[in-house]
Length: 337
Ligand SMILES: C[S@@+](CC[C@H](N)C(=O)[O-])C[C@H]1O[C@@H](n2cnc3c(N)ncnc32)[C@H](O)[C@@H]1O
Image (cartoon, rainbow, N blue to C red; front, side):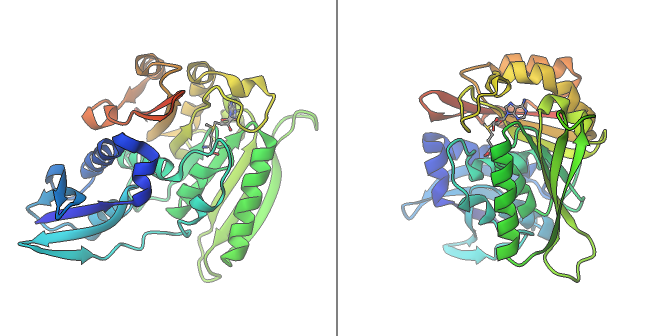
C-alpha cells in the first residue's frame, strides 16, 4: 500500500528549502522503529500538491501509526489505492495539548516544530519504546520549549537554565497552562544543591495529572543552575533522553552571565561528562548547535572521546539547515553505550 503525507504548513517556514530534506530524514529515522519495512520514501507531486510518500507491503500496526502521527512535519496522512485517497485517522497520542508549545513567544525561542523533531529523533534512536515511562532532560532549557514538547508526549521533563528570568517565566507559563486546562497539579520548590544560602540551587517542580482518577503523576521541573553541575542536581542514570539547543553565542535573555556565552564546544568540554552521568545506558543525547561556530567533526571527536557512539548513518547527516544569516543549525545524535 502507498501512503501520502501532507506536510504541516508551518514546516516550510522553519526550514525554507531544507524542509523536504529534513522531513525525509526524520521519516527515515522513524522507519527503523516501525514493525514493517517501508520503501520508496520520496517527495511526489500529485494533482499539483506535494506529498511525502512511502510504500509498505505489509499492514502497519497501531504503534507504527502512533510513530508516524507524531512526526514533526505531519499535517494529514492518506492511503492511496488506485486513484482513491482515503484519510487515515490521526492517532490521539497527546498527554498535554500540543498548543502548549506554540503560545509562548519570545526572542531566542527554539522553534517548536524543530524541537519536536529533535524529541522524536532522540526517542526513535534510543533503546526505549513508546511504552516506557520516559524521563527527559534539556541541559540548557531557556523558557522550556523542549520540556513542553516532552509533556505533550507524557514524558517527565526537566530542564536546567542559567537565566533565572527564563526559569521564572517558563514555570509561570506552565502553571497557568495547567490551571487553564484544568489539570490536577501541585507545585514544589526545594533546594537541590549548595551548602549555604548564597550558593543554593533550587528546583521548581510540578506533579500533575489530567484527572483525579489517574494514579501516576507526570512531572515537570526547572532548575536555575549551571549545566556543568548537572550530576549535583540529578541522580546518576536517571534520564532516557537529553535534548537541547546549545547557546548560539548571542545574548538572548539580556543575561550578562559570561557562562551563557560559551561556544558549543567549550560548553560541551566542561559539561559532557556530567550529562553522561545522569543519562541511562542506551539513552540518547540529541543536541542542536550552530555549525558556523563549531564543525560537526569537532563535536563528534568530543563525544567519541567521552565514549559515546555518534549516530552517523545517512539520515543523521541530513539535518543541517540555515536559520538566518549567522546561524546554520545542525543536530548531533549520540548514544550512551
Ligand atoms: C539556544 S538557547 C535555548 C533556548 C530554548 N530551547 C528555548 O526555546 O527557550 C540556549 C540556552 O542555554 C543557556 N545556557 C548557556 N550556558 C548555560 C549553562 N552553563 N548552564 C545552563 N544554561 C546555559 C542560555 O542561557 C540559553 O537560554
